[in-house]
Image (cartoon, rainbow, N blue to C red; front, side, top):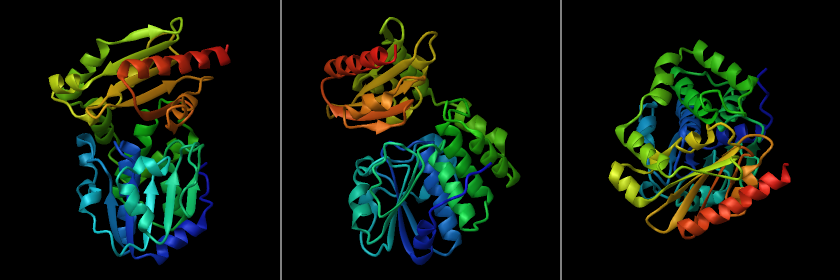
Length: 327
């Protein structure tokens, strides 16, 4: 059963607006790009002037999605004239990075998201913390508005939902996710081709960066926690960029006996980007929130200014506290 969409004011706001800015989060993933493009295709079909914007470029693997070339960096977007700004898959305002200023200048702000830590920062909020992906909430919106699910929209929504559910293997995968994908297949989605492109094919830089991360693999918490690290030198050696680290944390998570894992990714500016994963009953969103981040109970993240070694020690202290709380 596909859940009904329960926020008609969002649909009304979109119908009234003519020039619409679409924003998503920094370091965009498949849900961010796919959800944004699905809405963008629908709005353009309605005759709207829709501009998708992200503070970081679209990852190379997602450039195959129809309309990916429409994305603009914030500095390339003219600030005047937007009737409405629409945030997608951004758990809080800060996650939009430099695009946040553009979002907040619009007279009307709306958002679609599925992160339970979302503080409902827009004027109109369609946030479902139980949804498997923001793409699921977008699908409900498009159906509510009577929009046809075209092949282009189907491809974008599939990328959104499949990537945020780990190709339908994560704990958040539910019946709605499968029901939506069934509808996307009926709309002509080439499932085999899309799945291969998203989950099997990898760039050489990703594989080499993975090797660097695996060399740092460490187990702690009596075998229940695992971690890996990346530093700027690793990216240089692998000829990799930030997008090539996507999914690497899962290799630590997939060890026998491991219940929580993190990847600490040190950046050139001294910030440490952290990706956290867990199995029930553990809650890595609580860990991320200690460092100004957030996300889901079983998948969360943060960015924090601290030396890498100190950051790892602080993370491990919080993760061990989770172990104690859930004995």
